[in-house]
Image (cartoon, rainbow, N blue to C red; front, side, top):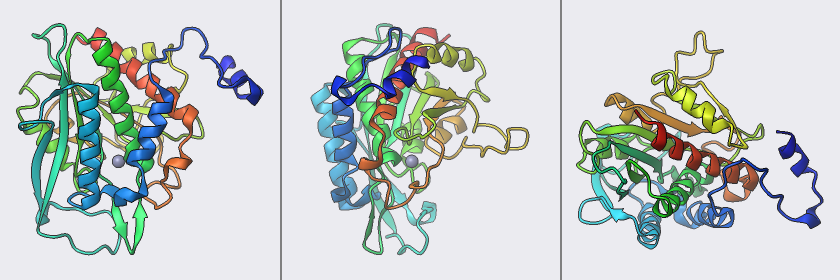
Length: 318
Ligand SMILES: [Zn+2]
């Protein structure tokens, strides 16, 4: 903690401060920032499910998966197509135009085989869709959730270099904003072996926090994960907070996020989850959720903490 505060006051001429000894560092931070800017680019028109911008975003993610070299785990490649029909849609922008009846959507799914092929699977997820364009205004969704996808890519790169014990499935999910449909599709699909998924690690909004802290929600439902995350905290330079996963009464009024992002579909299927995400900020679901408002130091520290957490889950899963 002291070292962090000291780093803030280093003269700029000394450049980026070295991480204090003992803090986990895995991620190429310049690449992380390039990738969140690429996916949070307003040119992708807010990546609304079924839109040309979402199709271009998906192609960009497929290209990253290919470049990274993880094994395709979709339907005949990296993509896992599905459709969402009108009665299932719950759009979140007020006063928006009605959806077309059937929307073509697709997840992007890859796998890194673990050293122990008999072990269960860890599913790492981050949605890439966002709210699109409303009244000619683009909602770029840089924190929500280009940031989660950028960390997912960084984690995939790490675990290809440092092979995990458990097989890991990496999924960039579509149609989260309209009802977690990509996650529901993934959970029901052959990309995840039925009854053999040990844990979902879901990333959604991980790049901004004035307080330099991020929630790890889910320990209320799976209490043994608390000790694992406290172990991670010792090697992390962001503060990990617990909560947002239980009834608000008796939880300081904190909203229950158990069903508020893709981990909700895993929870509904009885699969333990940890959801990493920041507290809502003033640009949440606004056109001002842009990449230039991301805090590079917080984002880099968080990405390293998330990779450290996944490594520790991999080592500690019963
Ligand atoms: Zn989101």
